[in-house]
Amino acid sequence: MIDHIKLDNFGPLSKIDWPKLGRINLIIGGNGSGKTFLLKSIYSCMRTLEEYKRGNEQRSASEILADKLYWTFQAEKIGDLVSKSADAPLSSTLTIDKRDFSYSFGKDTSRQITGLENHVPPRESNSVFLPAKEVLSLHQIILKSREQDKVFGFDDTYFDLAKALRYIRPNGKKGGKNFDEFAKSRAQLEDILGGVIKYDEPSGRWLFVEGRHKFPIGVTAEGIKKISILDTLLGNRYLDTNSVVLIDEPESALHPTAISHLLDIVATLADRGIQFFMASHSYFVVKKLFLIAQERAWSIPVISATDSGWTYDDLMKGMPDNPIIAESIRLYRQEVELALK
View 1 (cartoon, rainbow, N blue to C red):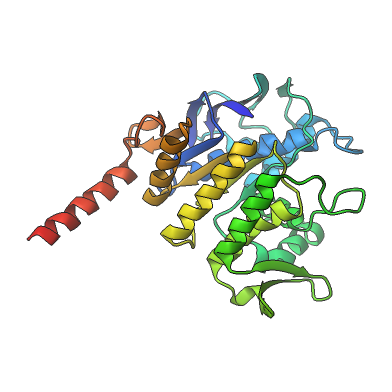
View 2 (cartoon, rainbow, N blue to C red):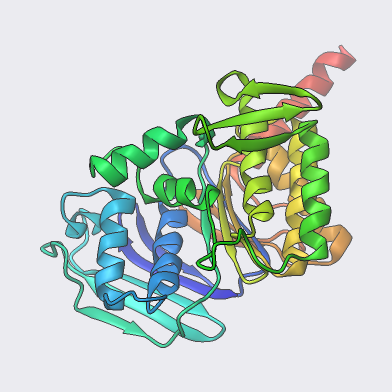
């Protein structure tokens, strides 16, 4: 599990020092605060460790990381990721099971990272980034743009996810050993959906199957498509109990009841071993995770973007002091005042 994250001069993130991470970790902030940037920085490190020495992979960890940063952030040169106002280099340290994966580079860096130090063993598990926008209806377009055209547009979070959705293990069989908690979570996800998503090999398209009826994915609700992605990754067993799942705006296209059910499923999966990082600006997400922390007596660390910088809290100790929370409370009080007039 990821224990600690330290970043300096990483784009909009001038300084992050987030220790004592838990099974579920929450990033709160408004638009443009750097939430997605933070998720992508974590993802780039995790996928580097997972591709390093896997199978016949011959690239060094620094070569894999440089490629991952280039295609994830889609900068002309990775040196452009260094904070524009910074005089010092960009630096990143991810601590996993008390072992560090760290690197640094300056503004003039093109595609070669020389300052990398790794004490983390190669990982057999897979991490995944679930973006705010669904990918099922764009699946073939994403693969073509990256595999054939090799152009910027869909970054590596989309490309890797598109490949993961059609994941088949090297022995030719989909998945491996499954887990009771995964099966339970899939049943709950499919209960929310009212059906299942299936890939139609002849047409190369995803379909939503409800009983005997089949619908093209393009006419299916956004929320259904989003939940279906997690269901698919559990079903094809791309994810296992040591995976790290990063979710950008879990509330996107979901009504509050569905958000609540989805986060209950996240808690079940986290209890089995999957570590989650979520970026949100939804009061419903924060409140539901607060209730999960209280019910399960779990530490759920929170990093919040405020006017004075990033602050650190834990939902086990209470709701954080954050502009999003404050605005939600203000609107509630305004509603009560109007009702009492």
